[in-house]
Length: 376
Image 1 (tube, rainbow, N blue to C red):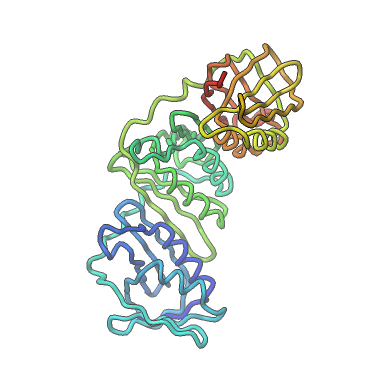
Image 2 (image 1 turned 60 degrees about the vertical axis):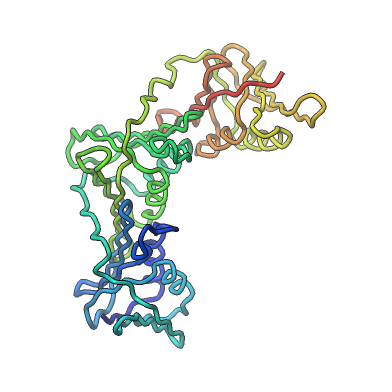
C-alpha cells in the first residue's frame, strides 16, 4: 500500500472516523482504523459492532493495499502534521507516514481479525443537513443519560410521509421536534429508536454537505440499523448504528391540548434571570416562578440560607400561577429554543409546563418540563 494525500483532507477524515472509537474496546482490533487504498481512492473505516463510520476521499494511490492501525493515535498524529502532502506506505507490519521532515512509523494490527462493516440499508429519504442537525440538537436535550434505562437514552424518530418527528425523554422532561424532509416514497412510514449520543454526533458531523440521506432498515428495533450519509468535499461519509431495543413510552399524550395560563417572555432576559437566581438554590431544589399582573417573579433559597429574587416583564394570559422547576433542566430547554421570545403554557401548578418559541405558523420545537415541589 502506498499513497499520497493532502494533510488537511486526511486529518479531517481520520478525526471523523475515529470519533466513535470505543474508549475501552472489548477486543484490541476494535480500537483500530481500517485504511483501504484502491483505484477509486482512499476508504477509512471504524466499527465496534454497534456503530460504524466510513469515509471515502481522493488520494494519489500508487499501490493498493489495506492496513489496520490505532485510530486515536493516527488521529493525534495527523492533527499535528505540518501543512504539507502526506505519504503513507505499508512496509511489512508497519505503516510509515512522511510529511515534510516529520516521519512516523506505526505498528499494524491483524486485518483479518477486523469485523466487516454492516451494509447501508436502502435509502428512506433525504433532509437538509443544517435543518436536521438543528432539530437533533434540540431533541437530544431531554434524552436520558442513565444506561440502566437504555430505552430513555435514545431519540425516537417517527417518519410519516414528508414529516419527521423526533422525541426524547428522561421521565422528568420531554422534547418534541418536527421537521419536513423528502421521502423516497410519498407514503413512507417508519420508526426507529436511535442512541441519542450517536445521533447528535452524526448530525453535527455531516453539516459540510447540503443534505443527509437517511436509510432505515425495516425491522424497526433491536436487530435493525439506521444509516446516515452525506457528501463532504469530494468524498462520502457514512455512519450506521444499531437501533436500541425496547418500547419507547407513548409520550405524545403528555402535551396538553388546552392551557389555563400562558406567559410570553424575552428568552435572553429569562435565561440570565434564572442563572442569577439559581446561584442560591441548593442542590436538587427548585426555583420558584410566580406569574401575576404582567410580571414573572423568580425566587430561590429559604430560611436562614441565602435568598434571591428577581422580576421581569411578561405577557400573561389567564390565571395567576406559582410553580417551581429544576433550574438546570429549565435552562436546557430555554437554550434549545432558537426564537428570541418564548412561550410558557400551563394547565395548573402541579402539571408540566410546555415551553416553545413564540413564532407564527411553526410547529417547531416543544419542551415539556415536570414541576418540582417548592420548599415551604
